[in-house]
Length: 290
Length: 273
Image 1 (cartoon, each protein chain N blue to C red):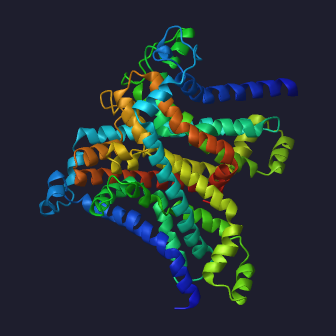
Image 2: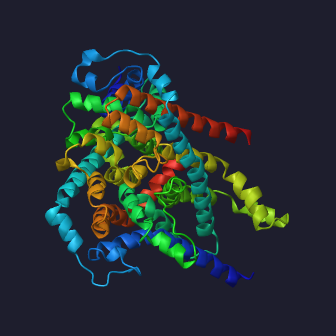
Image 3: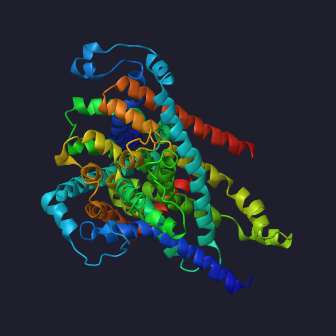
């Protein structure tokens, strides 16, 4: 081994050991765990552990709470994801025009929710959504709407959480869109103008295609993040009403850390992993086609 | 539409957006200074009529929130220091040192970016139990001490440090450790600041892992503490708003001061990612 390799080994050792032991090993063990009946009795005595192959998965696919939880999670991601992208792209376009003054100020303001603590703002929104004294219903009352029981009505509960998620997250993707917009050469817009394209034409034929890779990155990052939704329903609804806000990670948390059915919970986590992988691949494939 | 009208429409839209964005934060602050019950009166008060620190006093004196404040700070500070140190060491090796299998190892690491952490959480908990680290600060700290994101961020930055600089130091007889410490780290200061800001904030805001690993109230971080508080004090709106302010304000202020580094980090992670 030469000196450089030896040095590299020393520099890498702490991080690789930490990541290996506390990330990769547990991930692999998680898959193994999902093939066992690890539960409360196993924690008491490890000899109770049995290999049961895919029985956890079979049981999951046959249970209604599984389909509810994954359905809710997909609903959250499929509505919340595009909404986040639209709002953040709109904000990026407005902040980035040549006319706009105080750009840094607006960028900072729109970004502020991103750095707030999710648990804390979930508590704040819970009160903003309150059916009687919540500010949202009061504002709606002024224009003759409502009152709506935002978190208590099965039709609106997940939607309310989506609005919180968009508010909390759009600043992050806005920054990425601004970076993408600034990479588009000004000449392309000039050329389109000479060809007679209006503002909408320039947006459709210059901005959108040039932002292609940015859309892909944003889409994947947002999907990965949103499919892991947990803290908002944990704080705001505990999964209710009528299980409308139970999510995949919440199901895993309850089964694994409340009822200690760890084998079963590991299967939930692993299916979530597959869903996230599929969401990533679908978006990459879609991008290739365009 | 002429230019002036356009400008007015544009800035009005931006201002409305800013008001909507800031309103929940403003209301949280405002309600935290209200007397008990004032946040729920009809017609509503947007600002406290007789501002008071009663809610904060209650949190510190009776509910001992300072303990959670200390836990959050200890965990976030140690994670930040450790993560910057270990990630910069590994990032340096990946960017500047040649060794067999470098590309393959780095590629393997990147896989971690698409694996949701929940997949490993159950075995990780069992491992922590074996190590007697459940309900300790170390249990919350260790899994974040080195992150793939950090290594990636620092490697990308260090690729741009000229190789000749390091070769020259080697010819002068400097040890590898000395090169890393006295030449590479000072040059990498901006990206180290970015990673430090990023790690501090994400650790401070983290919820799920602390919730799992810190089962005893004496070690709760702020997010875990206020989530548990909000179950018992559902009706104490003003109190809950004060506890939210205590949780959010430190990171929000830090962001305002360090936003240059934070946003630079997001862009670096995204543009090249």
